[in-house]
Length: 242
Length: 242
DNA sequence: GCGATAGTTTGCGCCAGCACAACGTAATTG
DNA sequence: CAATTACGTTGTGCTGGCGCAAACTATCGC
Image (cartoon, rainbow over all chains, first blue to last red; front, side):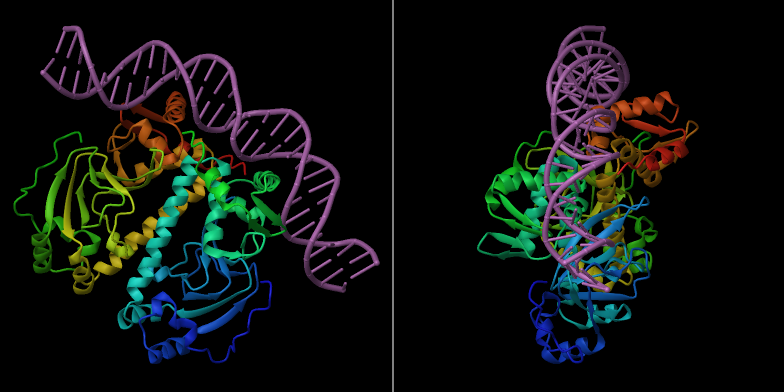
C-alpha cells in the first residue's frame, strides 16, 4: 500500500468494520459483536499464501483490507489466476460449496487484513444470521459469472483483447482516480497479468509498451494507470476473428 | 439416443425416479411424492434450448434423462460451452446463486427428460428437505471446480491436450463400454468439441483423424469411441510447454 | 553507496493453429 | 430415390503469439 493504512487496534475490533458489508448488513450491533468476538484478525504481508489449494478447509475469511489473488497451480508448476478478491468480500468459503478442502490457493496481492472463523461456525452463521446465506450465495453467483466470462474470453478472444479486458476489470473493481487517470490501486506485475490472461509476461510487456506509446495507459513498475479507458474498451471489443 | 428409451408414464411419476438422486436421497417416500406432485415433467427434443441466458429464472430443473450443454453466446454470436450436465443432476439453479436470471443457455445434447419446479419452491426445498441444500451446494462446488479446471487448461495447455482432456472427461462422465472401447453415449459433433475446447471444428477434425490413424479412437458421425484411453491420458499430460 | 534481487523491455526466429476453401459423405425428407 | 441438408475431411498459406536470450532498471537490504 502507499500510505500506511490507519492501523486498527487488533485487540478489540470495532463493530463498524462489518456493518456496511453485505453478508452482515442486516444484522444488529449485538450480533455483529458476537461474530467479531468469535473470529480472529490477522495481518498478512504482500505475496503470502493465506491458504493452499487442497489443504483442509479449517477456516473461512472476510477480507477487511488489501487484495487477494485466487490462484491454481498446474502439475508443471505454472500459476493461473482464477479470481481477484477486493476487500469487503468473503473468501475461502469452501463450506458454501460443500467442500472440505480449499479448491485453490489464496495469495495476498498487497498487504492485507483478514478476519476468519473456524468452519464449524459456518452452519451457525447461515442459519442464525438473516441475510448471511443469501448474500454469500450472491457472492458465489457473482464469482461463477466471472469465471464463466473468463472461460468465454479465453476461448474466443485474442491476447490483446484479453489483456484489455483484464485491465479494465481490475480498474473497475479496484480503480482509484488520480490526476493522470485511473490507477489500479494495488501492485500488479506483468507476470500477474499474464497469469490472469493465460499468456506470457513478455507479451503483456509488449502490449503495455505499445499502449503506452499510444497514450492509452501509463505504467510504472507494478503500477498501471489508465489514461484513456475508452480506447481500451474499443480494443477489448475489436476484431473478434473467430 | 440409440434405442428408444423406456417411456415413463408422464401423467404420474414413480417415486423411484428421485430416490436414488443425491439431493433427494435422504428423503422419505412421502416427501418425494409431494416434490414430484409439485413439479412438471417435460420431454425435449435434441438441440432445444431449455432456457436462455438472461431470461428471468422462473423454474429450476432436474435432468432425469439425456444430456445438457450449458452454453454462453458471445456478443459476436459464437458459442462457448461452459459445462456438460449428465442426467441425475440439477440444473438451471439460478436461485442457488442468488440470481434471478439464468447466467447461461441450456441446450439439450440429446433427447432429454427434465422435471422442473417454480423458483418460489426453492426456499421451501432448502429449508424443509434435509440434505437438499448440502447436496445442491456440493453440485455447485463440483461445477465451480470444473470451471476452474477449464480455465487452467485454456490458459496453459495446447489445443491437442485440451481436446484430449475434454474427450476423456466426457467419456468419464458419460462413457459406455462397448466391444470396440468406451463410447461417449450421446451425440457430439466436431463443432461441439471445438466449442468445448475453444478451437475450430477443423482443428478438432484433424486431431481426431490423426488419433484414429494411430488407433487411439474411432469416430463415426456424432460418435466417438475411445479405444486406448491411456494413450489419450499421456497426450493430455504431455509437452506442457509454458 | 553498492550489490543483489525482482521486475521490465526488446529483438529475433519459429511454428501451432487459424482462415479460407473445396469437396466428400451420411442422414433426412417428401 | 432424388434432392437437400447437416456433418466431416483435407489442403494451403499465413500470422499471432510463444520460446529463447540478453540487456536494462527500479527497489531493497546491509
